[in-house]
Length: 99
Image 1 (spheres, rainbow, N blue to C red):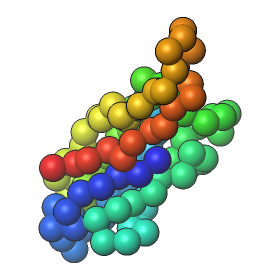
Image 2: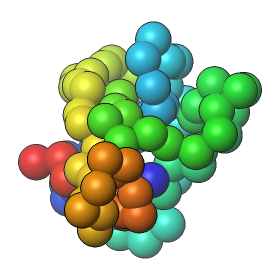
Image 3: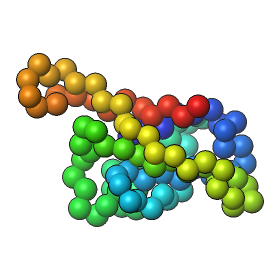
Image 4: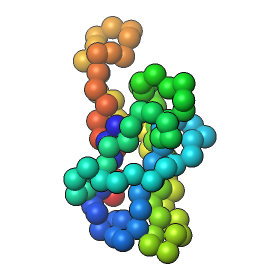
C-alpha cells in the first residue's frame, strides 16, 4: 500500500500510518522522495490481516520535528477493479495521495 505526498508536508517530521479501523499508526520511512510503502503486516496492520479488502482504509499521521501531531486523517484506499461480475477482483489498489 503506497502513500504519495510532497516531502514538504512532512519537513523534518515523521510520517506514521496504519491499515484498518481502530489501528495505531507506526512510523515509516520513505522508499523514495514523496513515496512511502506501508506493509500489510504488524505493526501497520492487525496480526490476523491477510491482504486488504476493497473498501479498506488507511490512517495517515504527520508528526512535526518537536513530536506534535499536525495531521491525523483517514483515507479510503483507491481500488480499481477490472471485474464485470459481483466479485470486486481482479483489481489493484492505487496510491493514497495526500495533499
